[in-house]
Image (cartoon, rainbow, N blue to C red; front, side, top):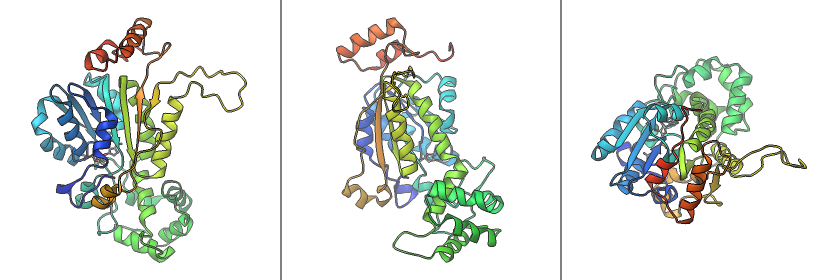
Length: 350
Ligand SMILES: C[S@@+](CC[C@H](N)C(=O)[O-])C[C@H]1O[C@@H](n2cnc3c(N)ncnc32)[C@H](O)[C@@H]1O
C-alpha cells in the first residue's frame, strides 16, 4: 500500500530502489501493472526518456484517470489500460507490447483509494462496506460479510488476515447481520475481541475482506507466471508487497523459477525437467529506510523483491540461433531494446 497523507500528496514507496531494481534505461519498454496515481510510472518515464514506452494497468478506473493527467507529458509513449493485471498476457498481446525490459507490481491499494474513494477500505471513516478495486465487479465486502456462512467467514478472516480471533469475530458478525458500514463492522470487532496495543483490532479483518473481495492472492499468482514470459532477456521483474501473504507468494515464485530442479526433496535423480527462467537479483529483501518510514508511515511494511529474466538453451521461447546470439550478446554486455526485438517471444505461434 503506497503512502501519502492525501490523494494529492501520494508518495510512491521505495521509489529510487524501484528504479534501480528495474534498471530503467532510456529507450526501454516497461509495464506498471499497478498504476495507482502513477508515482512510480512518472519516474519510470522520466528515466526511460527519450524513446521509452510504458504500459500502465489498473483495475480502478479512477486511478487510470488520475494517472492519465499525471503522465500527460508522455502521452505519445504511454498506453493506459483499465483492467485486472491477471489479464496481463492478453493485454500485452492485444497491444503488441512485449517483450519488455521491466515489469512492476506495487501491490495492494493506493492512498487515494484508502483516503478518498469512499469505498470502505478504511475503518477510520464511516463508509459503505465495498472494498472493490474495480467498481464494476459484482461481489462487495458487504456481500461477503452478510451472506457467508460462519465457517467460511472465519476461514477468510483467518487465512487472509492471519487473525487468531477469527472464530470469535465471525460469530459476532453472524449475530449482528446485516452490517452495512465500515464503522459498524470495526466497532463490532472491537467489542468482540477488545483493543490491545496501538493497532486497531479491525485491521486484520479489513485486510482479509479486501483480499477476498479482490481475489488478490490468486491474481498475484496468475500475473507472476505471465510476467516472466513477457520479459525479454535480462528484463526485470520487481514486486513490492505489503504483507506476509503476498511476500511469501513472490518469494517462493522467484525461488522456484530460479532453480534448476524443482523435484521434491529427497528425489534421487532429477525428473522434473525444470528450466530456470529467473535469476534473483536481491537475495535480501529491500525495505524502506527509517527516513522513508518517518516521511511516509504507510511504507513501513513494504518489501521489494527483484528477479531478472534469463533464457537458457531448451527454453521454449528461445531458438538455438537466439541462444547463440544471446550468449554472445551477454558476453559483450549488451542490454538494449534492439536485443529484445531479436529475441521476440511469439506467443501466438505457440
Ligand atoms: C499501491 S497502489 C500503486 C501505486 C503506484 N505505484 C503509485 O506510485 O502511484 C496499487 C494499485 O494497484 C491496483 N491494483 C491492485 N490489484 C490490482 C489488480 N489485480 N489488477 C489491476 N490493478 C490492481 C489498485 O487499484 C491500486 O491503484
